[in-house]
Length: 265
Ligand code: DGL
Image (cartoon, rainbow, N blue to C red):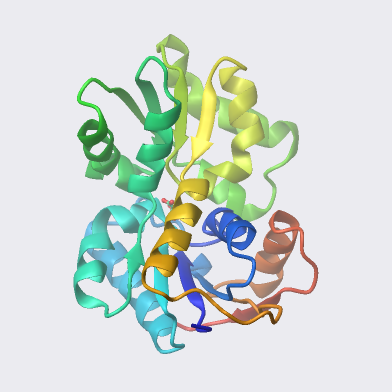
């Protein structure tokens, strides 16, 4: 079925998941919405995140997507269930795939979850990890400065590293072997995070597992794209088109992306 896959996030973070979907499913078309104008979602209250997420979902539904990927942990934590119940298409979030990825990698079951305040407060990663292993020792840490850093586009260099290192300071006294990047913006800061935690710690995101799950769902529901045509992806932002385009083209290593402004209500 040649309809697009919808991907949503509060901003550019969902591009980290999009990149993996493009790798695993190169024939699929992606319609993306980043709610950059209202980013970050992390500090917002649950109801507001729910309202904004539903607005994105509905806007993509009007564009006839065949499946929705909530490529935002904060939105997944509070909206996955209601979207799954009420939308007539398959809906996938990023928290269960992230927890699965960590569970596969960890050796000592000592797992740090880096995420937004909203995701940490929701306890969604704890629930997901403990349902996979009751022995998991989970160290949650909210990193409120990371998303604005990524959205500014100034996420390379010493200033960015120092800001990341400062946010990760509370980990110095902890013991862990695995770090989950529990916010889809954080893989863009992965090098800084890896430098801080050192080579003995595995740093992973939900992107690969999510992309795998998307492929499996589409195959199972017989929804895979069967045409050989090059897909035309469309990226929508509620904020600045040039900034979104700059970050997206760099991250996806692609020139001339079709980036458009969208109004949500
Ligand atoms: N990228 C999002 C997440 O995975 C949201 C970040 C934010 O807007 O605070 O949680």
